[in-house]
Length: 143
Ligand code: AMP
Image (cartoon, rainbow, N blue to C red; front, side, top):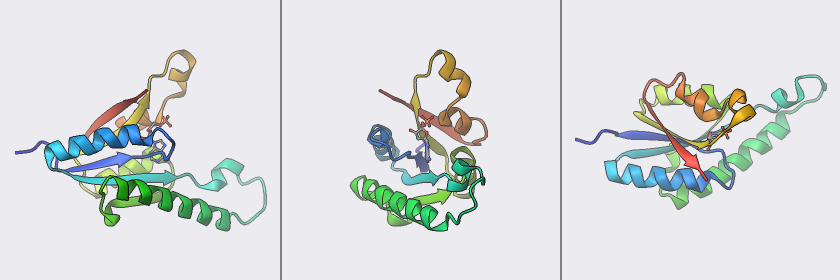
């Protein structure tokens, strides 16, 4: 019996993403597990704090579209089903917690930068994902 059946890989769409995807792919093959990718687009309203009275819907739509295209490229490259390529809007940690639960995922995979000193105080997405996810979490060290 394999330990993991469904894995959720959180992808930030930077040039570091393949480091996380390579490991996730290898682990999913070893476990014969289903792979699901998620990228969370942060609401543009967060960045502007609502101070500027303008309609940001179009900008948000463009960001969503670009994220979907980029995630789709990775998904195709790594052989992930279209239905398992998810783009959502919100706070990365909360969305990853929600999706992991909703999709009955048994392993969440995130990238992790070796933070030192002051950076440690700021926390990381990997840390936020770990606290609040009910299944196992694997942090892939980003070089
Ligand atoms: P960070 O702590 O922001 O340096 O990000 C480390 C890892 O968190 C990344 O390698 C991804 O696995 C995950 N991550 C960060 N931002 C996002 C995002 N917007 N959507 C999905 N995963 C993310």
